[in-house]
Image (cartoon, rainbow, N blue to C red; front, side, top):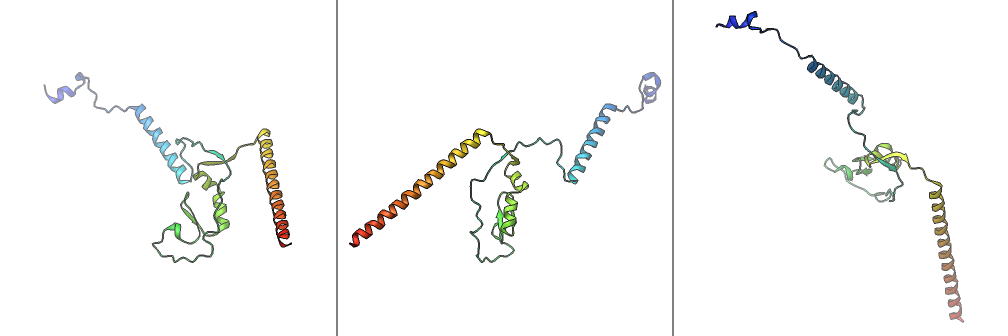
Length: 168
């Protein structure tokens, strides 16, 4: 049996290539999807297949922002000086330097910084009970300050009276 006899119509072999239409349709859909994602990334949008990160609600800072520590200090800056030690205010969360205090506060309170901190810009709504509890706490603090101030005033008066009695 020769090669030509096997290739004939009697052998039942078709020399035409068979295309798997399902596979090529899947590849085309995948290519279109990646092109759309690439276009969205070029336009500055996030790809849709990434899961949304759950961020916590915005809350008040529990620390004081230090704006005065480097005030009036002279520093020599060269090309090898790290960014944190150059002039201005350094944000270690975002790894950026801001030149003045107003812009630094704007940066700290801004959307990008809060996102890097893991917070959304949404604020939790306070309930009526939470507000009442907060008022009670503040009233108690104010009463305590008033008592403390009154006690200091009485002690000052007693001290002055003792000095006058000592002079006589």
